[in-house]
Length: 285
Image 1 (tube, rainbow, N blue to C red):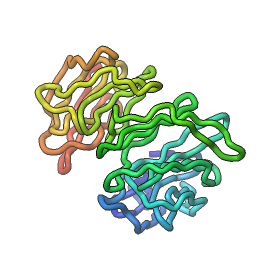
Image 2 (spheres, rainbow, N blue to C red):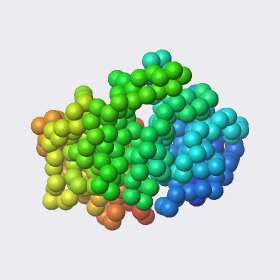
Image 3 (spheres, rainbow, N blue to C red):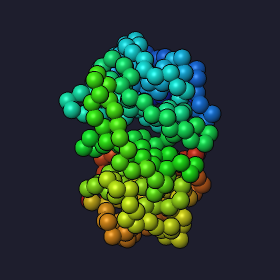
C-alpha cells in the first residue's frame, strides 16, 4: 500500500494497481512466465517505481512507473523464483537485489543495469526468502539443503564485487526470511527455529519444538521486544527476543491446517492465515 494505492502481484502473473479507497483499477499488467508454484513475491515500491520479478524475457527484475504502469527498466534474464525484490543503499548508491531461479542479481535501482550477479542454484529452483543487507554485507539463504552465504560488498568500477565472509548450512530458509536484530539472525528454517550470528554464521541456539509442535516451517515476526512465532499447524507462541533461547511466555491456538504465511502486524492487531481462512487477533498493549 503506497500513497493511496494498493499494489498486488498475483500468482498467475497479474500485476494490479488499485485505488485503496474504492478498489477501482488504476492500471494492470500481465506477465506470463510463472515458476512451478506460481508467483509469490510481493511488489516493491521504490520511489516512483513498482518493482516485481517476472523472470525470463520479461526481465528477472522489472520496474514500472507506479502511477501509470509503464515499464521503466528491466534487469537480468534468469527465470523467476519466489522472493520479493529487496532494496538497499551501499556507499551512497541505491540498489535492488533479486533472488531468481538460478542466480542472485543486483541492479542499479534507477536504471536496472546489472552491477553484480552470483550463481545460486537450489533444488526445484526455489529461492524464496528475501536477502538482507547490513553494514556493507549481503546475506541470503535457501532451503532444500542448500544453506546460507554472507557477502562483503565493495565497489568495482561502475559495478559491485563481493567476497565471501562465510557460507554454511547453519540456517536453510526454505520459505521464511530471517529477522536481523542486534547482530543476530532469527528465523525458522526447514529444520527448526534458530538464532545465528550474522557476521560469523555460528549457531547461537536452536529449538526443535515450541508448545509440543515442531518449529520447522514456522514463521516469525517481531513486535517490540517480543517475537511472535506461528507454527506450521497454527499455534502462536510469544517470547522475548533473546540470545539465550526462545522462552515462550504465551501460547494460543489460532488456526489449524497448513500455515506457511508470515503473520501481519497492523494497528495493534495480528492477522494470520492458512490456505483457506484468515483470523484477526487483538494484541494486548
